[in-house]
Image (cartoon, rainbow, N blue to C red; front, side, top):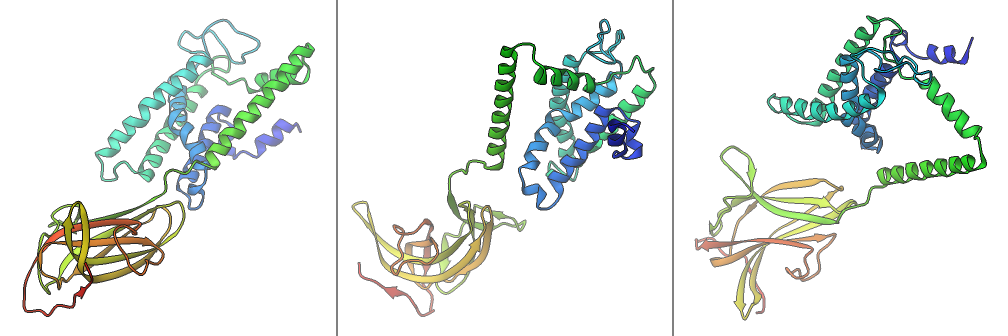
Length: 349
């Protein structure tokens, strides 16, 4: 039994009758779907390595294979197995170029259709739709090729290419060819290693944390709008505070919420009185976001009071201020007086 027969026995029986290039398409689609959707695997560089050709080449190749099951045009060549003289066929270079072009057209069209469905343009619908399209046209391509005679079918000459590569690399005609082969092999290895490193160890972007305020609208959606501007002493007002971690590492956050009376003179702002409202703590992983609904129950009264949110990594200092906070945001509010007693804390101006 030949080694070739042994390898073919490893392929499931329904796939053995298919052309090798179409089997490769099916295997690639399944591998890409697994890399994109399976837990843990979807966080590895394999998702990107398989995803790019899956979007930019594979669907178009299967589509072109269904349109042109015939071998390329032109006279038969002993170095290109399966090349016939069909007027409808295309050669290998044209097939590759059309595969890229049609893939670039097919993928956005599938996304456009998904945009008008309940599923929308999301990872799972895109992977499932593109995989289903590719498998369907692959089945059509296989059926159309089977309908042709052996001499007319398109066939990728793997064995011819491998034999030619072995001859060129292992049995060069001259010493110059041998040196060029070594340089070429080293260049390919270096390029592959560089791309692999870039994919496996992507450059980290800027590290920062987000701090923002939101309110809830009539549709129960969180929006950055319609903030409360007029409050009443002792009466609660609801707000949402959000923190986003883009630090590329887990971070322990402490958030202080204060209502401050400030004095502004000569472009200098001084806190003359403040009320501590909340101290909130949370731990977030990289790329994790935290929203917290809280109430603000003011005790200070007056116009142009500053509702201040001070964000710190880990514990805040003994005297937290806007200047020493890692991130800060605030609202200007007016608080009208009521009969509720004040629990504010006076500090020196």
